[in-house]
Each structure stands twice: as C-alpha cells, then as structure tokens.
Amino acid sequence: MPLLRNKKLPRWARIVSIAALAWICVLVIQLQPQVSHALETNRSEIATGSQWKGASFPVENFRGYTSPFGYRRSPTGGYSREFHSGLDIAAPMGSYVRNWWAGTVVDAIDDSRCGIGLVIESGNWEHIYCHMQGDVQTIRGRRYLVDRTGGLQIAEGQRIAAGIRIGRVGMTGRSTGPHLHWGLRYNDEWYDPALILRAMYGSARRVSMEP
Image 1 (cartoon, rainbow, N blue to C red):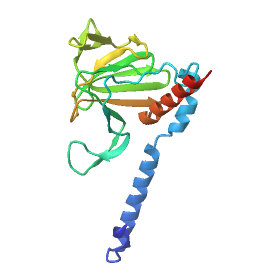
Image 2 (cartoon, helix red, strand yellow):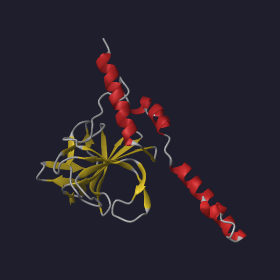
Image 3 (cartoon, helix red, strand yellow):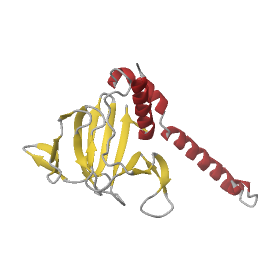
Image 4 (tube, rainbow, N blue to C red):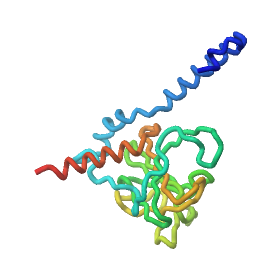
C-alpha cells in the first residue's frame, strides 16, 4: 500500500495505518463463512435420501442473478462497501417465490431494508426472503404476510412444505428493481446461497444418472 511506504509520514501515522489494516484483515476473516463445513454438517440434520433431494429453487420465471453474496459497493450509490448477506435473484414483478426447504415460519418481516419478507426455519437452517409484495398484518394476535392479489396469507408458526408458494417478487424495502433477496443462515452464520444451489444441482444430476 502506498500509504504505508510513504516515508514522509510521521512514525505514529505509519503505526496507526498498520494497526488499522490488521484490524480490517481480522474482521474480514471473521466474516468469511465456512460454507464447505456447513454443507457437511447439515446432511444428517435436514437432508433425506440424496443430499438436497426435495429442495426447491426459490423463484419462478428466473431471469438471472443480479448481486452475489459477499462484499459489494452500495447499490444505492456512493463508494462505500457493505456486506451483502444473500443472493439477489431477478424475476419479473409478481413472479411467485417458492419455499426452499420444508420448515416453520418464524418471522414475518416489514422493515425499511428487507421490506416485506419471511424467515423460515428448517432444523439449524434459516432461509430469509426479502422485497416481496403485500404487507404484514396482525390477525387475532398472530402475524401474517398477506398478499391478496397473489392469493397468499402466510402466518408465523405455520408449517410450509418445500416448493410451496410463499410470496411474490416485488420492490419493497431497499431495492432498485424487482428481485428476491434470498439469504441462508446455518447456526447463526451466513452462507453463500449460490454454493447451496450448485450443490442442489449436482445432487439432482447424480440422481438422474442413477440406473
């Protein structure tokens, strides 16, 4: 780094720069998820038969991936970098979102960042869906994601099978275009959904080739 090689800097400034760089390196290392470890440890807890048999791709009318997991420049402008905790999957407005894995709805979200969304728990996995259409309502003391146009009403505590429609692609929350933000956590650590999808595809191919 040119800053650290500049001999005109006072000694105290070079020490502070080196310390700051070391702190950033430690922070980045701590935030890097151990995806391969998760893929190994989850098999006995949520997989049945083939490793990912029964899992569902989360979006109908798939158009592409618009923002990967990891560090990125802020999509709303400027040069700041931020940690993107999921995978953005583009699809036309109103396309249905499907539940990735059978589980229980633990949170109906309505905030300025995720927008309208759901958190579904499957064993030690949590899958998070953001920027969907509709709104969150409390009905007889229970929170629901309600999308009347899409014919959907999903309640906290509800058991949802894999592949069931749970929402529609929208632009609620912090969004610059219609897409689903799909996040995955295992034991409270974030994991790259793209690697999970790759593992699902590989498992499906192996199953299809079996005699």
